[in-house]
Image 1: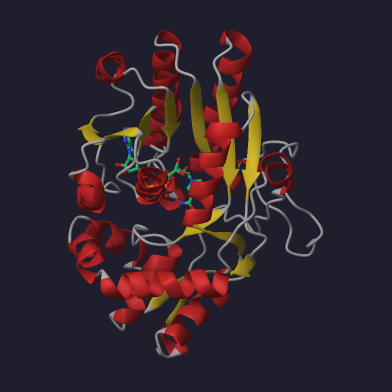
Image 2: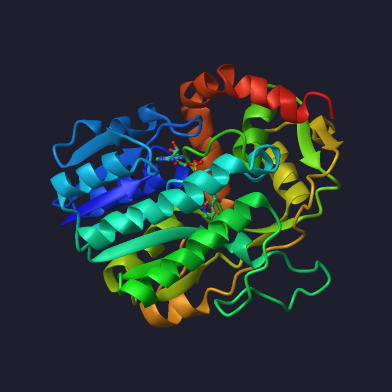
Length: 339
Ligand SMILES: NC(=O)c1ccc[n+]([C@@H]2O[C@H](COP(=O)([O-])OP(=O)(O)OC[C@H]3O[C@@H](n4cnc5c(N)ncnc54)[C@H](O)[C@@H]3O)[C@@H](O)[C@H]2O)c1
């Protein structure tokens, strides 16, 4: 079995590669990644020397490079994690999101059609469903919930989902789509909420929280997401969408307070900054379909997952310190410097 994993130098893709290579030591895994600001080759160091692993630096929008790689590797399965993934960046610069997230997905699927791939899996997000009101805790996103996006990021992901399902219906390409809630865990780029707060707290820097921090997200430990995708590509039905979520809804402000407590830092570090434009209030996934059909359930409780994550950031300081000392710093100043 040969898998092409795109975006494998990023947060979830790298965790997925580690999971697959450990569970299926005979699989060949080829990571295709452009190494944008979010991709970090050092993340893949644990597998780089494995004879069943290959890294290829390429853009999923580069048709020639993608087709050449498929020709060479003849993959059985393609899992597409490659994306521009940060909502704030999509508000600043939507174009690159449309290019990578939509056109890149189409390019990969064209290659899948040409080379007769057995499964193309599109890694998507619960953000395609828009948001839910805070005062209706009884409401959840199901796979039938209409697409109703808020940001250029979620719109580009929704467009890719629709295109993937269209390739299934029109060309019979064996496509599956998963829509997952917010992930956390090792190798999370330090511009996203949890690693940003851990890194800032460790450096005794202010902890910038949007608005009043009331926004609710459903948090899932990254390993549980990887296990769900593993199940879908092996046992899930083609042409189907599977929601993945932890039933673990938390307000942003409560997450930040937990991080302060775990790191023994004062809550006075918390500073409220002007809210994100169009900020979604609440995401909440109903994952009953993947449980019913594939037997998936999240295994890591948030109390344990957040401790493991903090421990990982404490013992891998070099990984994130290198990142925040580079180009990321300029971006950070632009986003939070004058708020
Ligand atoms: N992080 C979450 O909480 C979350 C939740 C649900 C779904 N998702 C989805 O999961 C996927 C992975 O998310 P992540 O958080 O790991 O993202 P990430 O930003 O950490 O990683 C993205 C990776 O894609 C690569 N990439 C970007 N553009 C590329 C291109 N044009 N060609 C090839 N490679 C390219 C980057 O170099 C990087 O390695 C995304 O599709 C995202 O929409 C993320």
